[in-house]
Image (cartoon, rainbow, N blue to C red; front, side):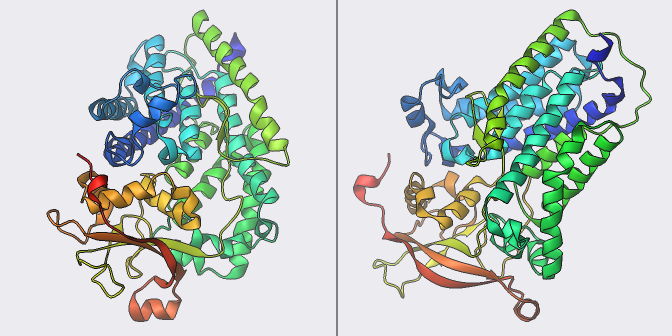
Length: 473
């Protein structure tokens, strides 16, 4: 079938696959380095406790067969190794069937992690990586040219990512319709980056242009992905430029990067390579069957997009094969931060020697400039932002965090930038307070070097100590 493959996209496929393998590598590395404190047997939300109440059919995962921290670590590091092998191009030298299986390995491993990750993995880019990763397994290797239907479905994902995000904004916060959301967003986004202060201080008319350009990129340009070349390449290129602007303005884990990866698949890059031999019949049958399944499952996100009650970042099946996406349907006008402190004093008075814990990514010390972490995902820092929005977001894990700080738990402290207490002297009490954070102006930045100013709002959690009954073996 001559229509089945697209020889002109051989180089596009190669770049897409290597870039996707890089995103997989970051995702598995994040899991390997953070899971013990978050999800381990002694973590804040232990996986064994979750597996005891959630059946396999609701959350398919290898960990339903067996769980231990050592086994989780083995899965995460195996995912790193396979991702690195794919990044190096191992799949190109394998038979077509073996390359397909190899690409399914990181998908299955990461699905197993996401489906037991609970609150820590409740982000849209987790499902997006799984959806893209599953489809990428059927894109083929050097034995065959890229299948047209898989390339089309990759564009379909990119369309839903961008168009869904555009719809949720237009239907959501009125500031998007007034083109004023970016007067606040750079200051109140979950995790600012090193340039976010400067983005916030751009003139008001520039912010309005940013917002208008966002609407064009998300509501108009995605339609052009399905037009003939070179218009589709131009549309994808514009999306890449927009995503790079977002990369520069904040820390959004790998959301921007995997969107860029998707756009790479729509580029028609010159390669000078001659067409490969025709694909085997079994491969054509598998690809068409997978495509038919994904097209059928797509009716749910389509219905969601046309609904007035559109939801964002929702998975419609336990395998995360087809999902709906979106971001910042509403934009906070004020930034709040939860500041965690501890003391060695016997009595937790207000004038006690309270010492502040420093997190890696979220704002804390007003003089400490934000760093660039994305595409690496600081899960605890992100959840601390949600906790500041509403304590309800932290009901299931914040108490566990405070308990582990009282113990000087080594795995938990590794998630932080700095603990104010030596390893052999844990605090007697910890507390949490809510502060309002604002960016400083140019003059204050020059005079003090502080990028933030903060003011106390209220108590978030009163001083708490570790009782004998609460001590863990």
